[in-house]
Length: 196
Image 1 (cartoon, one colour):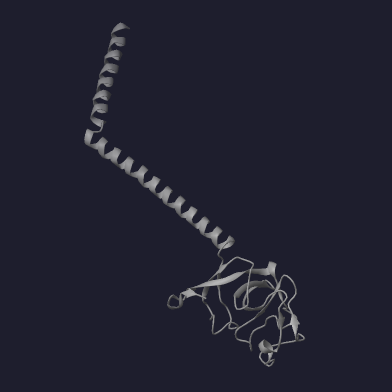
Image 2 (spheres, one colour; image 1 turned 120 degrees about the vertical axis):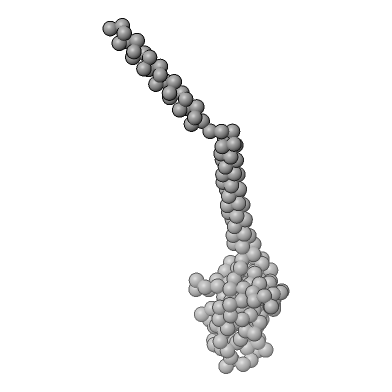
């Protein structure tokens, strides 16, 4: 039994030395290790840059949305009731504030829509014939002279014949809480950029 056990031990040693020589041959060279480390560093740097870029874009988008919702809403003109002052598909910026005067263009909510009209009178003002002398231009079913109630504004579109505005009792004077703000700037089209 002893000679067989010795032969087994020799076989095990010879197989171990063969595996060690194979392991030594399979180890990467210094150049291979260096190139692999560069690849891993590049991948980590790329992922870090990508993460930082996406995070920055999300922060900028969130800030832009907050500014546009809370302070400077951006609106698009639809319809012709304010032409020639404002035309279809123009982009405008509003300033959220509550002290309006005659001549300001305001945006307000009416029947789940946002409308743009010019302020003709504020609380306490009396609206008389000069603004409404040509009743054929649009619907007018209010009695003149008309006094604007407290906390409301009387608005009209610049294109009177197609505008539905405070001359109609269905719209009436606009309550302050429905007013989004005063139109201050035209953004689009580029050739018309400027203060409104």
